Every structure is written in C-alpha cells, then in structure tokens.
Image (cartoon, rainbow, N blue to C red; front, side):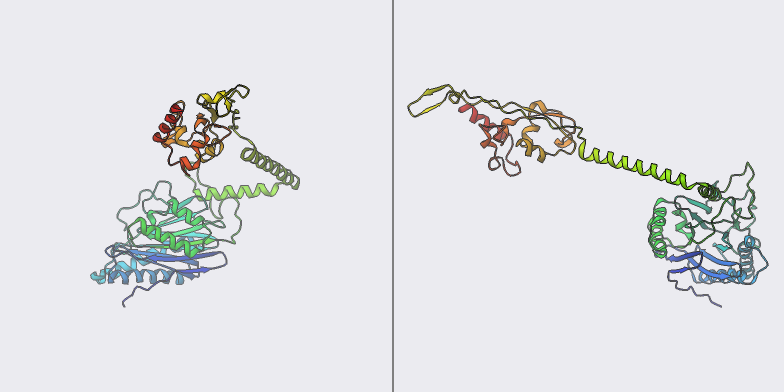
Length: 453
C-alpha cells in the first residue's frame, strides 16, 4: 500500500475547552524535509500529532503516513492505558511496527523519523516525543519549555543516565524510549500550547514569537505568521506547527491534581509553580472585604487624579526656561538739539551714523527652533551662529541646546522695534523668504554701508 502525502489546508477548530490551528510550511527547493500535523479525537481525549522526516522522497511520504496511521490506531483501540502512559506506548508501538517492517523489507527501512504525540484529557496535557520535535506552553509572558531537542538543564522531563543503545528515532532499533514530561501539565485559561517540528523549534522561544502570541489576531493568523517567521529565519526550511489555546477550564488552586509536591532538592516545574502562585492570589482576593475594596479604589482614584494634575502642570504651566525680557532700544538721538541747514533743520544725532543696538541675551528653551527665534527677534540663524560671543554654544550642525544662553545680535534684525535705524536692510525682501541670502557677503556689504555713511 502506497501512502501519498496529503495536501493540508490550515485548519482551525473550536471546542468546549480549547481551540486549535495547525499548518505546514513546505521548504524551498533543495532543502529536504517532510513535516505533517494531524488532530483527531480518541477514547482517551483529543490527540495532536506532528511527524517529521529528514528526507522528502516517496519512501518517507509512505513512512510518515504509516506513523500517523499507527499512532491513531493505538490511541483509538488501546483503552487499557491511562492518560500518562498512552502517548508513550503509542510511540513505542509505532516504532516497533516500523522496525519489524524494515526487517522484512530492507528497502523500506526507517531513517530519521520523529514524532510528537500530545493528548488533552480531563484538563491535563500528556506529552511523548521521539526524535527532533518540540513542545512549549506560553502563559502570556513566558514561554515554558516542556520538550526541546537540545534538552536544556531546566526542561522538565529530562532523564539522567539514558541508555545509549535505545533509538533516537522511530523504527531504527528494536526498542525505543520516548521522552516525556515528569508530570502531566495542567494548563490555565488563556495559555497556548505549541507543538512543532523542523525550523520552528529554533525560534519557539524568541521574542517575535511571543509578540505574535500576545496579539489579538485569530488563531490561524498567528500560526501563519509564526510559520513565515520560522521560514525567514531558516532560509525557508520546512516545518510544521500546531497551536492550542485553552479556555473555560476550572480555576486551579495549589498543586495539580494527582501530583505530589517535589522533593526539596528537585527543581520544581516552572509552569506548575506559576499556576500555584496564581491560585494563591485568587484565594487571597476572595478574602478581601467590600470596605477594603472601596478604600483601595478611592486611594487609586486619588493617586490617579494627582498624576493627571501633575502631568497637566508639567506640560502646560511649568516652564523650566522662562522667556527673557527684551530691553527696549535706547534712543540714540538728541531730539532737542537741532542745527540749521540750508535745506531744513535735522537732528544733530543724524550728522553721524546712528549707533547700532547692542546684543540681547536669550536662554534657549525646550522645544525652541530657529523659526521661533526668528519670529521673536527677526534675526536670521546665520547671524546668530556666526556671532563671536556664541562660539561653541550649539550642537552638531548648528543645532540649538536647551538651557544655553545666546547673544542675539539684533543689529541684524528686521524688527523696527529692535533695530529702528537699519531694520529695512534685513527685511524678507533683502535676506530672502528663508534667509537664504544671509551670509558673509551680505554681512560685509552691510558693514561697508555703515562705514561709508
């Protein structure tokens, strides 16, 4: 019998206590690999299975199909095992089936076949794995590994003194010892279980994956985006992924049912420890009296009002750099002193060139721009930047620095109140609408005009 590889379409289904979505990413040409995922119901509960082969030839298509069939056959027919053993025994049975088939027909001998079998029953998750596959649970903030290919020290389920004679893949030896978690996992509402093979196992604990899981997009969209992420990170290496999200579960308090407290020297399972902490919080919350709740709410409202008032003051009222008053220009003429001329009488002060107004001190304020300073003083930025007293008082590329005190040369201002005698020399029609004419030649021409008066 030839097992053809089926064409899978992303599937999303919702049940009473969970929803799931699964899909596969076919690797680009030249990257070998075959990955499959399936979901079905059994007398033991709901089963999720992912299968992977290192090669993508017709024989591996047949063998991965046999793995799916044998796992499903065992879970549907062997009802004597309890939940904690049925997933492990299903992989032992499937591996033995492949091994004996290869003994009879060497051309159909199994190679690097991996399988992960997960069962959800009575609000508990049972995991068993042979080969290169991974499973983790995401609690909204942290990705808690259950089974990973590289076996970090803090992964629950790690076994010491594993017999090296036992096979690492399905069907390559007479005996196989699947990897399992130490205890059944009891998920909480909102948590997400991830089962994968291939390239996704390399990114399962990455920050981009966590951000996708925290998003409010539908389950099938999350799976699609995570698969694309894995493909981009691995140059389009093949992979398969199943995501299960739990809800409507009983609120758990204390240790999971049927699980004894770990010994003092044994490192407790992270996920269980977090579940116990949540259970204690919910217990203490029930003891809170209505009076305490009203008092706490009033205190929080008061704190919130103070914060809003402070923000309003800081944004709209408080000014760390108050404006500096600009002194009125001094009258350089003596209006009462006149002298007769043949044409008319003119002020004595105009016999010599009028005095140029002095500099005005100004402290740069937060949010200041050259446009705002020009609006206030009518002086182009070139004259301020190149004014000798301001040397070294600017940032990179002539940028303003809040808190720095500048000397504004209002002698180059186009404001008649600040530069009453020469303001016409610095109007927009002279310096340009964007001060593009202000420069060394402009300044030298103005100084020459003053000398020749």
